[in-house]
Length: 162
Image 1 (cartoon, one colour):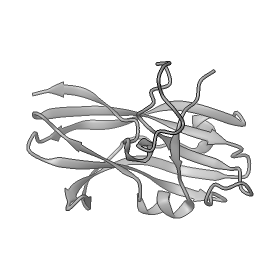
Image 2 (cartoon, helix red, strand yellow):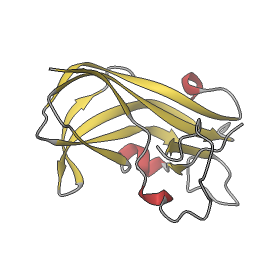
Image 3 (tube, one colour):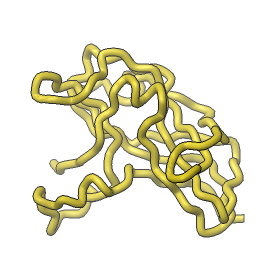
Image 4 (cartoon, one colour):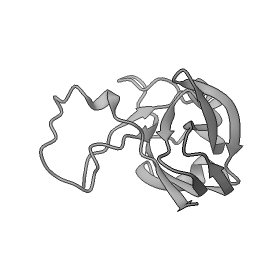
């Protein structure tokens, strides 16, 4: 067993794509898929449909114009039917060219109900997993680490340079 960390989504976060990862390419890249991870807890009354990944331009560290949308999407039951889970999911793209001189914002969007702010009174949670601390590595991470909020969400690009 290991501990994972993430930021929880609300209905509004998913509809508007409020959470995103900025990616600055270091060369031209042909994107075929993106792997990321979600954390789920007590989601039995939550409905989630059409969860997709979208890629936007970056304008002053905010989402700019929509460039690409994944060709596949998920419902909650396609991600997991367990009460609590941490799952890797893949979003596919049709050989999207990413320019090495641009910054992109990768976001998750979808339609959800009964997904409100996580609290002691509301234990239902759907969260985007943080990239650190990486759960497969044990070691010197302390819960007192005040830098946890600055770490990006887990995101792995699958493709090739061109």
